[in-house]
Amino acid sequence: MGVSVKTLGIDRLDVDERLALVEEIWATICVDTKAFPLTDGQRAELDRRVADDDAFPDDVVPWDEVKASVRSRLGR
Image 1 (tube, rainbow, N blue to C red):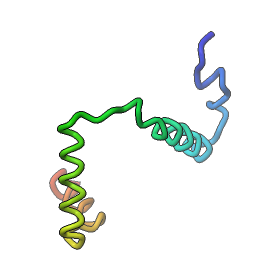
Image 2 (image 1 turned 90 degrees about the vertical axis):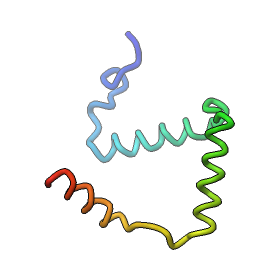
Image 3 (image 1 turned 135 degrees about the vertical axis):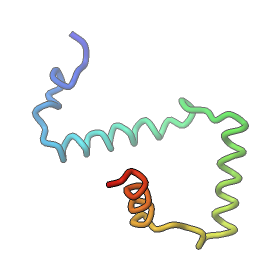
């Protein structure tokens, strides 16, 4: 039998424990940056976005406004 939620006993964890486990697993994946190489275009776009953020640090929209806008467009 292969590795699964059941065979590892993860299904017996409560939601908070499962979320914590997901975060831990994701952190171990993110450490291996060589497994996810960026294309030149992706790297250039990230560099452009960082430069834009550095140049205009106050050009942001608060999360509450973003949520309200989305809910308004969805009619909720």
